[in-house]
Image (cartoon, rainbow, N blue to C red; front, side, top):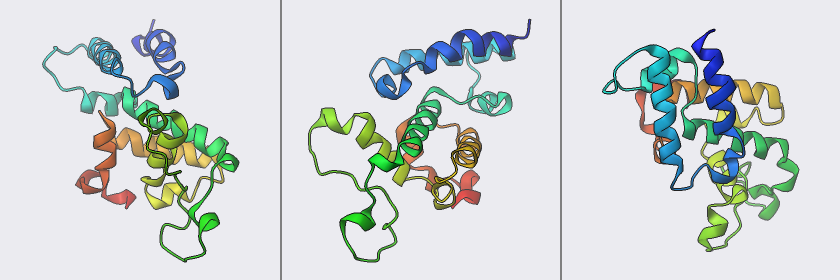
Amino acid sequence: MNLGTIYFSNVHSIMTYGIIFWGISPDSYNIFRLQKRAIRIIMNVGNRISCCELFKKLNILPLYSQYILLLLLFVVKNIDVFITNSEVHTINTRHRSDLHPLSINLTKYQKGVYYSGIKIFNHLPQNIKNLSWNVKEFKSALKRFLVMGSFYSLDEYFDWDSRSDLGTFT
């Protein structure tokens, strides 16, 4: 049996179950380490080899990139629940089409699906955001971007615009 099939049937399916709710919990790093171990086993490499290029070669998203993908798909599929900046004010700014985050300072709220989804969606490259009306095209473009970025953390995602290897998405 193919190791990739085993990965997707056992590791990936369990890892992604409910990930939009637990994806940024402190325990997610342990799951990410297990995912990297599985990738090394599939590729038959040692423990000291970086998995970043292995994820790209296998076309598999690291845990945090998978979290971003599923969270943004949730946002796009429920876009009618969110408010854009143009609905809040009439000033014609470059961020008028971004989603408007509510001004709530509770950490529990800010780590939740709604607020995190808005923050991550607003940081997408503009050409991917423009596809949000078509879920299929949006998902395809987003997955290509996330595989190319192979983000190991949300901080890496928020710094994507400083990376030269992702220059085609600016």
